[in-house]
Amino acid sequence: MATKKKTAPESTPQKTAKTVSSGKNASPRPAAARDPAQAVPPIPAGSPAKLSALDAAARVLSECRQAMTCLELIAAMAAQGYWTSPAGKTPQATLHAALTREIKSKKDQSRFRKTERGKFALA
Image (cartoon, rainbow, N blue to C red; front, side, top):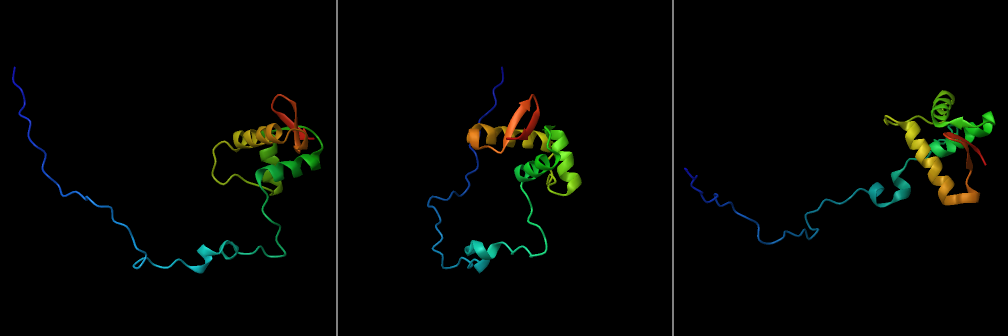
């Protein structure tokens, strides 16, 4: 039985000490990155503020006054221009998780209630 001869790995220079930046050569950050108020541009007075998915769901449920599934809520929110999924493949699952999380965490103070399996209404 032939065995392979083990060879020593080529030695490569290794760093033994950590390099710490003293800040002298670091480029200064722009003012907008330091001040959070300046980082986000103000919303013009004529345009409505963008709603979160939960806020949009609450608005849709208050307008239709009936229990809806998450798929129906997503379609209604997109049709009315309140909220659209940025790039998610399953926005209804994300909305369902957010709704159930709010119901569980806020209990009686939640804006939503579960009427039956998969359907939500305003509390």
